[in-house]
Length: 446
Ligand code: C2G
Image 1 (cartoon, rainbow, N blue to C red):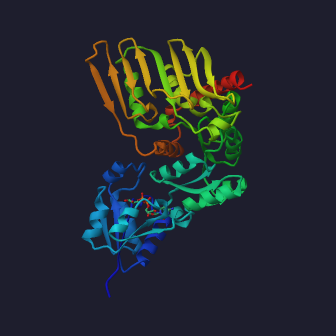
Image 2 (cartoon, helix red, strand yellow):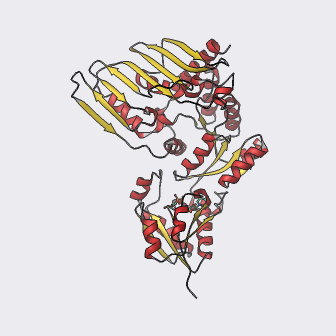
Image 3 (cartoon, rainbow, N blue to C red):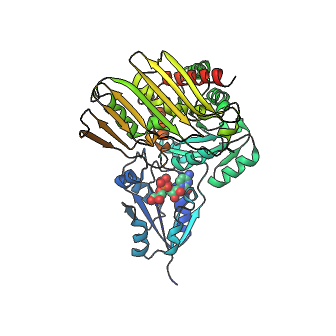
């Protein structure tokens, strides 16, 4: 009888029972198991962040399980296909967090997705004195789906559970991603270490307080809260309880945006005097963003993004803020312009859900200007221009996946080394953004 050969791949960082169970079941699929362990450079290229263990340690941990008949290293994108041919593979397998992703390999061998292990962080990790952060998601909308996919690209976290007060929606989401479903908040908190809040804006405040009071660190989608006093209050609770509370504005954590801030502050364009940031997205009129007459509209949805570069470049202490809006039939703003004055310059932030414009960021200084082409909020490319139109400096940087992975990785870094990178989005910046949201609400919604 022909020997059935199985192959699987992974990083196997901070080796845990999810990895162990995967290899155990992979071995049981056939007679001979080959395990491909990713190299550091391949992980870098495919955008896997935060890998801690060395390649040697990761290989050794796979070897110790006794399930692998052969261990190889995976170092490039096209390697899976060539390995299947080279080793005469019958079955390719990987965890169900990758469902659909490797279907194309079905042309060359059988593809089996093994159910991922939901619950991590038991005996095996305690023995290693290491910790995988168990993440729980509050909310089951589009962003929650993107979060799951991006969290796969960050080592040291396991998206373990999801909460939504409606049992049907939560069950559907949980089944899709093989995670635990809860519509009881107490039970949900008991199952996780950290919470990612991706529920409707107006519910953030209560969920943040509740999570912090259950001693959970919190990463909250923007806009974190809609009132200055609420922002101050939740940051104070977090500080008193020595917990991390971070607002998730993904641009703030992406590498290209950091490069941009560095160049803008380098003196190349002199002193910064004007910033114009624009972000528009034509939204389906049936979606919550254009339906929710109290908390929908373009500024609540996109205002955090467009205020970010302005506060990063001028500081968060504006002296004046004025809003002009174009409203749709239901009174919600489909286009908003926020005009700021600062002691050293002026800025305009525009956003739209029902009006389309060029999504660019322009930073004007006394010696030149920086143009970040659309979509600047996923900063990958920008140019520095001077009086002489032929003198242009060009900069580029990678932006992987949906970009949320940078935010998740920075959040994780905050947990292990508090204070190391909280300059990327400071408490005061988040508080000032909440103050601007509050002003918008009182002027334009009441
Ligand atoms: N896994 C699992 N349960 C978890 C976590 C991971 O079953 N809770 C599985 C993954 O689906 C994968 C294997 O364990 O099959 C290794 O996971 P990682 O080390 O995270 O590697 P990954 O990034 O998934 O590598 O070429 C690389 C592979 O495509 C996937």
